[in-house]
Amino acid sequence: MLRNLILCILLLIFVPLANAVERVSVLALFPGKAMLSIDGQRKVLSTGETHSSGLKLLEATPQFARIRVNGEERELK
Image (tube, rainbow, N blue to C red; front, side, top):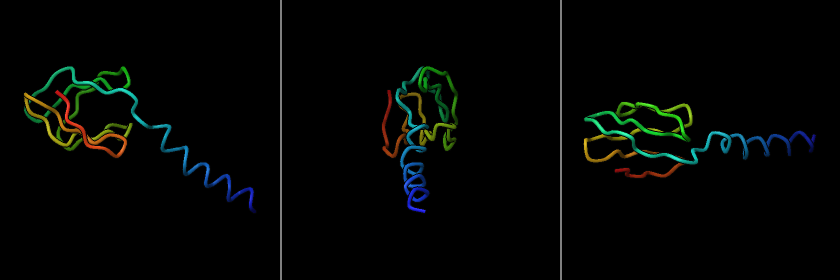
């Protein structure tokens, strides 16, 4: 039973890390949309959309994109 408990705790710790975004950059910006490079893969997201990695586009303008990634908000230009 203790072994199962330890296994569950380890899974809860490490499974979210498997989806952690390592690199994100802006390729293009549009009103309400942003083309991002997420860990080397190009993806267009609309405001409010969440990528399978957990990255969420909070706001996009032609000047910047505001995202939430790995629990932190960031502004990209």
